[in-house]
Image (tube, rainbow, N blue to C red; front, top):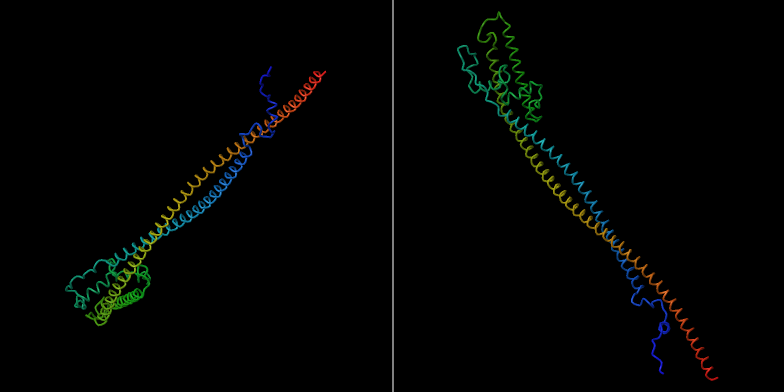
Length: 357
C-alpha cells in the first residue's frame, strides 16, 4: 500500500536554509536604518550650527545698530542743545536790535520858544543853529528826557565815558563820539563856571557884555559856535554809529538765522538717521526672534530624531535578540532533525536485520 504524502516537518525546512542573523527579519534592514538616522542626525547638527552662527551674526549686528542708535541719540541731544542755545542767542540778538532801533529812532528834539523882549544877545542866531543847540542840550537839560542819539551818547559819557553803557560798542565811531561828548561837557562846564564868575560880581556895572548870569558876548558866541559844530559832528557820528550798529546787528541776526537753520537741518538729519537705525534694529530683532524660533524648532526636531533613533536602536536590539533566539531554536530543531534521522536510520537497519533473519 502506498504511503500517504506527508509535509516535511519544520525541522526539515529549517535544515535546508542557512542560519544567519537575519533569518526572521529579512524585510528589516537595521544597519541601513541606523546609517540613515546617523546621516540625518549630522544634517540636523550642521543646520543647528549654521542657525547658531547666523543668530550670533544677527546679535552682533543688532548690538552694533543699538550702539549706533545710542550715538545718534547723543548727537541729536547735542544738536538740540545747540539749537536751543542758538535760539537763545537769536532772541537776545533780536532784543538788542529792537533796543538799538528804539534808541536810534527816538523822538525829535524839542523846538525852542520864539525869542521874547527879554531875549539874550545871542538870540538872533540862525534858526538851524538854535535848533542844533537845543538838540545838543536836550539830554543835558535837567527837565527833558534823552531821546535822541546825541542825548544817548551824552548819557553814556555822563555814565563814565563808557559807550557800552547805553548799547554802543567800543568802535572807533563810538570812541570819537565819547570824546566829542566829553569836549561838549567840558565846554558847558567852562561856560557855567564863567557865568557863575560873571554873576558873582555884584558891584560890576550892568552892561550887555557883563550882565549878571551872562558871559561877555564874543566869548559866548565863540562857545556857542563851537558847541554848534560839535553838535553837528555828534549828530553825524551818531547817525553813522547807529547805522553801523544796526547793520552789525542785522548781520549777526542773519548769521544766527543761517546757523539755526543749519543746526535744525542737522538735527532733522540726525533724527532721520535715528529712525532708520531704529527701523533696522527692529528688523534685526525680528530676524533674531525668527531665527530663535527656528533654532528652537530645530532643537526640538533634533531631540525628536534622537528619541526616534534611540527607539529604533531599541527595536533593532529587540530584533537582534529575537533573531538570536530564532537561531537557537533553529539549531535545536536541526539537532533534533539529525537525531531523528539517525534514529530512523538505526530503526531501519534493525528492521532490515530482523527480516533477513
